[in-house]
Each structure stands twice: as structure tokens, then as C-alpha cells.
Amino acid sequence: MADPKPTVAVLTAHPRWYAAVRKRLTDVRRREHPSGTRFDTGALPETPWEVAVADMGTGNDKAGEIVGQAAAWLRPQVLMFLGSAGAGRFYVQVGDVVLATKVYLYDPQASAAPRPYPASHRLEQAARMALREGSGWCETEAAVHFGPLVALPDDAVDEARRTDDRQAVEHGALRKCPDAVAVELRSMGIACDPRLTGSFGHQPEVLTVRGITFCALDRKSPDLIFEQVIETTVAAAVAVLAELVPWSAEAASAGSADAVPPVQYRDHIDYRYSTFEGSNVGKQVNGEDSRR
Image (tube, rainbow, N blue to C red; front, side):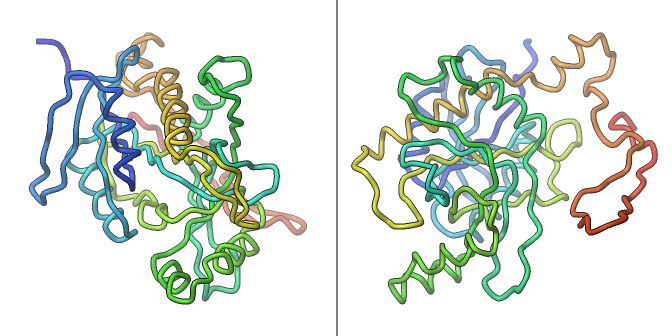
């Protein structure tokens, strides 16, 4: 019997995004989590991956719960989040694709910018290779942007809807996170919990891919078919997965007898989340190898 394919869990927040992913799969079968969450699982042609796609619906709390279910039940190597976002910079246009290098979880009550959640470096590198100019990943002229996203919490979104002033909330988030290129609604509930466990006992690698469907700066957006943005964004996600090598295959190609290549936490000085205003000190991390 052939070994099962490595799994990617693709989580969407809208039925149209879910349908756009599902139609690209073959041999689709329905799987139902004991809680009732349903995943459609199938092979992604011309890639080594099996994809399990779910529609999370609205609400960040529900999204966070489904993320935990997907990680614990499916044991994916990759968690990928697809959906829409608003342009936070004038050079980002409706119809473009944004791949998050990190995600800020916006807190309207906090005085300082929130600590970001970084994307998987390996996935980001695969995306940069797959979506480079001239790679032919998309038939349209959609631009691809790599940069931070800022995610709004449910209570801020609810307040914006109550006061009919969503733009003020989005502007506030962009001011607090000045390097963010887009603002969105779903990653507040899907920031990867370090307790999540995927394949080989490792935390799943995470990548957020967003299609720009509106401009958060002025709300004046050109006419563009929503389905076109969805198709372009899903095409970008598929191109990334086609480029990405699963852990076990990567180890085999490197001649390693281990299932997972030793890619994590060798001796280094950790400067993440440091602030440099003169002399600086990093945290020394000694010899933590992913094979241990």
C-alpha cells in the first residue's frame, strides 16, 4: 500500500474561496471532525500534496477553534489561510495578491504596536521562488506583494459595523502597524498556537495568502470581478505548494536517514523582537536540533 501523501490544511472564511480550492482537487472525499467541522480532502494535481480544505465561516473565535482541530486531527505539515484583505498602501491595488511575512494582531486599546507572528521562512522562500516575475504562475497581470498584514479583532469589527465607520478602525490599525501592506479580519483567530502539533510532532508551518478586494485607504476601488480575485489568489497558493517540497521528500533527497531535515534551532543568537537603540544583546540558543 502506498504511503499517504503529506497534508496541507487550507482554511478559508468564505464559501467562494472554499469552492475555488475544492474544484482543483481530485478524488475528493468528505471527512468530518467529531465536533462537526467538515473537511473536503483530495489530491492536488502535479504536486506531492494532499489538501484538506474547510470553510471556517465568520468570526475569529471559531477560526481559532478550527485551526486547533485541523492541526490535531489532520496532522498537516502546512496550514495555509486564504481569503480577502484591504490594501493598506497606495501601491497595493485591488486584484493584487499579498503573502504575509508576518501578521500583527491589532489591539485598539494598546498603546504600542503589537508583537508580530512571523510566517514560515521556508514557505515564504518557496513563495518567492514560485511567484517570481516571469514564472508564469498566473495568466493575469496581478502583482504579488510580500509584507506584513494587520488583523482586526472581532470586537473592533463589530463596533465598526455598529457605527458604520469601518474605515476609521482600519486606519487606526494601519497607523499602529505602519509597515503593514494590508488589513484583514481573520488572522486574529488563526495565529498559530505554539501548542499545535502537525506531522512528525512538529508545529505546522503557516502561510497566509490574501487577495486584495478593496482599498482600506479611500474605499474607492475599481470594478473587478470578485471571482477573478479569488481565482488569482488560489492560483498563487497552488503555485507555492507546487514549489514546496514536503519534509520527508526533502530529507530523502538530501541523503538523510531521518524523516525530517534538521532545520530548526542550531546554536545561534536570537534577535527576534529585539529593539536596537545602541548596544544590543541577543538571546543565546544552544544546540536545539530538530532531530532531538
